[in-house]
Image 1 (tube, helix red, strand yellow):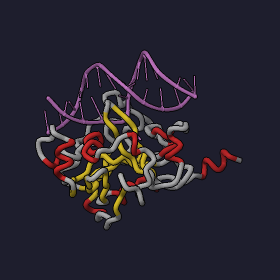
Image 2 (cartoon, rainbow, N blue to C red):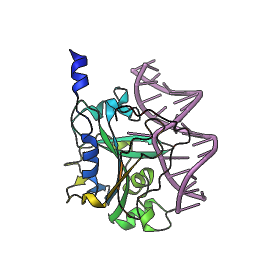
Image 3 (cartoon, rainbow, N blue to C red):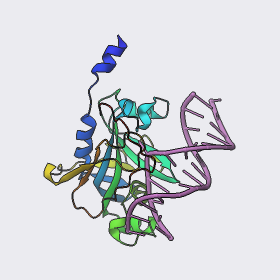
Image 4 (cartoon, helix red, strand yellow):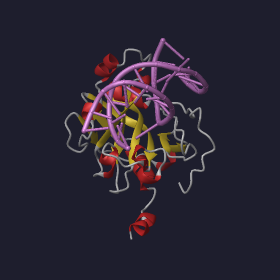
Amino acid sequence: MESLVLAMVSEPSVSADARALLGTVLVGHGVSARITEVEAYGGRDDPASHAYTRTPRSEIMYGPAGRLYVYRIHGHFCANVVTGPREQGSAVLIRAGEIVDGLDLARLRRPTAKADRFLGRGPGNLTRALGISMDDLDSDLDDGTPVCLLRSRPVARRSVSAGPRVGVRLAADVRWRFWISDDPTVSAYRRHERAGASPAKGL
DNA sequence: GTTTAGATCAACT
DNA sequence: GTTGATCTAAACG
């Protein structure tokens, strides 16, 4: 029966995948950023995820890992890395990064940033610095030319902090935001205005 | 029914 | 002044 399968589906490998992304380098249109802050989204079981309702748009997150999911918010874009396992719809939002290459280009794209550490601070800012837009949706991050992900040594677990996700209304208490401790490029925590006492069941 | 564009406003710099 | 897994409404199919 299908319901039986659904009940057995694995859980939070997303959080492990999210941690693993810390320290890796995301390249976008001539600018490289070392990822310093991420958020895990559990997909079909996570009310805060866009994949919570499976539609043609969220279908990409149910596909193979290593693809880019981009969505638009407040006139900005946010970049997500699709993670496994398949049929889970999980993805990791890239919230912040330290620009390690293409600094001049990044500064050009983000003229309002007062200092370099603000260039990729915040999901919308990071995508702007990397020139990522809806055109990059569904990019293959393993061999993709415009946008791709470089392998790197994982960050030591003791230098990673965890906390509630930023700005989400539903499941606001799930601590699936991970960042490199004391890194100046990590964005500030802001709880959603209407983030009520969500049950956060089973997550 | 789903997806996109535009906008609000509290928390941040 | 800047930012954003929000919100609503218009534009799809």
